[in-house]
Structure formats: structure tokens, C-alpha cells
Image (cartoon, rainbow over all chains, first blue to last red):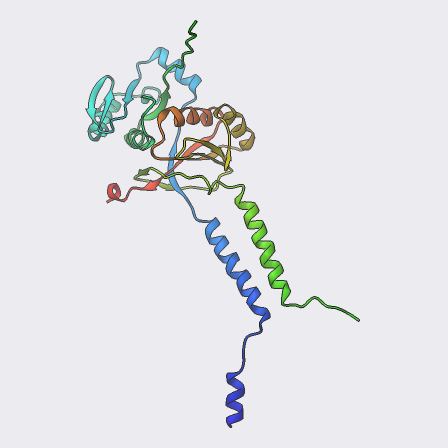
Length: 143
Length: 130
């Protein structure tokens, strides 16, 4: 009886299996890491050619951003960023066609991305489409 | 005399091969780019994308983990997207939260020019969601 018990306790997994276990663990963690999804926001920007045509015929809504993240300028009027969704929705409700609902976003060169994405997300949430108008680059030759 | 390779070595060989390919694959992704995502509410899960554009905390531009100049971006993105139909032209856009408009706006324009569908990679803003 005693001899039988002792033989049971001495059973060990084969050493060859440790390599396989390590291999399978790595594959498992690798698959977990590679399938970790990112989250984000889609943004549709109209083609620049289309925008130019629209700008000739219609008066677009203009939104100007500066480094100060608490204030934005809607059609030239400075307003609090927190008030933007309500004010912009009022303006957009008067517009009928998708072309009229284009909001031209003008940013100063020092506007942080976090502020920009916050404001453009607000525009999208109230049904506006965004287009970017960059400051013209000028080359000045000093003689 | 016959010398056999011990079976125990097979696991080690596989392990080393795997490490080799993992390191090789890591050289192609952009996990080495240092950036901190901005926060926003109402985010959606991103689908798999062939193209990832990143702007690091040092305002350097990366396409699929490789540093490049802004002037080359539109052509390179266009090449990578090829003739993919709409819905499969997603470009993951990873911008450091403090990067300024003079860096990210020309990049957005280039992606748009290349026909990419822009997807800003962001952090879920829990304070807004609640």
C-alpha cells in the first residue's frame, strides 16, 4: 500500500512540455496584444476643390479658433466654447442643403490638437460638416 | 552511430523563431512613436486599417511607424490605399494632444487629398460621457 502512494506523488510532467507551454503562452499574449482595438472618431472632410466652388456661391459658417480654449469665434462673434453647440445648432437649423451646412474652421498656427478636436466634434455632433481653411503661406524675399 | 537532436530543443527553437518574428513585426508598427492621445466623448471602435499616420510629441510625422516629410505624405498614403473601395480606406490619425495646427492641419489636408477616410484615434473622455 505504502509503495503505491509514493509512486503516485512522484509523477511529474515531462520536461519537454515546458517549451510548448511557453510557446503557447507567448502566442496567447501576442494575439491579445495585436487585437487590442483603438477607439476614435471618424471625420469626413469635403474635397478642397468642392469647397472652393461652394465658397464662391454661398456664405459659409465660419468658426475661428485661437490658442484660448474657452473662447471661439462664430461668424466673427466671440462666444464661449461651451455655448458653441447651442449657438451653432441655431445657425444650422436655418440651413437647408448639405452645402450650406459646411462649417469653415480657421485655426491659428498655435491651436492645440485637443482644443481643435473638441470643437470639431461639437460641430459634427450638431450636424455640421467640417472643412479646413488654412492661413495662406507667403514667401517674402528680403533683398 | 546516429546522433538525434533531442526533442526538448524543439520548444526552444520555436520560441526563438517566434521572438525573432515578433521583433521584426514590431519594427513595422508605430508603437515606438511617443504620443499622448487627446480625449473626446462618443467614440467608436476602430476597424483594421492599412495606414496609420502619427504626429509625435516632438512634432515628427510618421507613416506606419516610419518617419517621413510632410511633402511625401499624400503620395505615400495614396500608394498604400491603392484602389481600395470606400470603407476600406480608413487612415488612423494619431496626434499628440499638444501638437499645434501648423503641424496637424497640413497632414489632415494630405490625407484628404489622398482619398483617405480620416479616423482620429482618441481616448474616451469619461467625465463628458457621465
